[in-house]
Length: 181
Image: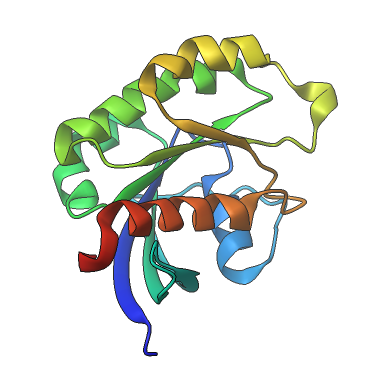
């Protein structure tokens, strides 16, 4: 049976330095680089996944992944251009910087203003440096609970849950949209 082909535009967002670019690099190429390179504007990456639809049929997912600069003022100016057609969002905060968690609801709201209630998965990144964590589970629950989003701890450095995060989001979209996707 030929797989159904689904194209998904996924946007990563969050404050500067939370690890968006590193998460994408880990997912797309399996690599990690300690050097910090600031994203200017938006960078596009692509990766394909093979999943199963709700009825067990094979689904080939072509993902276009946008890595968006970590400045909300920039997002406000260009959100229509960057988020138009997005089918899912990965919102990232840094477990070692509490302020990045506090800012995340505003990022998510900005996207939802543009594209509506598309699926959002939140990644609590840098789980590999537990000794530097500033964020507690109860803080995550109180800030993100009202947004009804799935949260997953990740580490771009070790690869922990990175593939799972993208697969879960893509799989959820494919299942939600059903056979007509």
